[in-house]
Length: 328
Image (cartoon, rainbow, N blue to C red):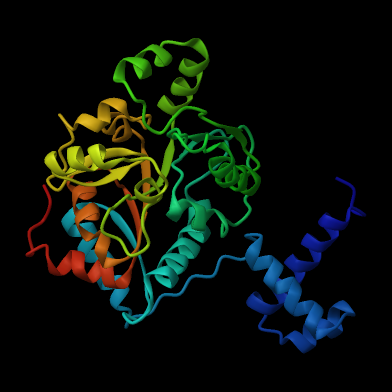
């Protein structure tokens, strides 16, 4: 790429400004003089350096309650947790946004070239996708984990916006999964799964190196998309209640003890079977709000998560209710 390219020039200037500011402790005024520009321009360059991933700021505090919680969750559940500090008084809408922002800025650590990244649509992933930090890769594929269609919409526009943001952030090829979230008849799903065009997508999903998802829950103040988007009817809710469901990943449901066998609605779901999901090397769950505690407990019991991003209140509730017992 030629040095005169404006994007290259901006990146080079931002890198220089960041090195002077973060590595050499120069003030913005001093950097402005050195670069022959204004202080406000330096401020914009530093912002660009952070947003584009040139700068990765980490804070390590010896007084951080979140660090203690992260250690507890690792010891008890064998899950690497990233606890997002915030006051308990914050609304669940703002809580979700802050957790999503943190997750978006962390995700680049887990994604590299030659990877298949599975993405489950939903309220959490929609918020997270707006905060992804650009990290260009090569030969990386972002694949939709579950269908988004229902009787009101194909869901293509909604899911594709999330996938597009992931693809743009990582310079990745995007593979959509244009099927219903839930089939009316399990036999219809089985027949479609035998089609070569569908098998191609299923084979890509089977090669996932990273899976990124929120946890669906009927209890949260910020409702999970699957529970408010016209995907379930009264009969479905009665079925989920009868089967003791507490949450879902990519529209596949599980119980509080982590079991998922015999849940009727799973036979109609388009998401990956949870046994298969557990074989993905890195499984990043993003969760906010104490109302999702039952859903989180169930997901941990099922072994669905390797890396967890959650708010401090939820982390505290999780650890407080564990009774000190380590997970086996």
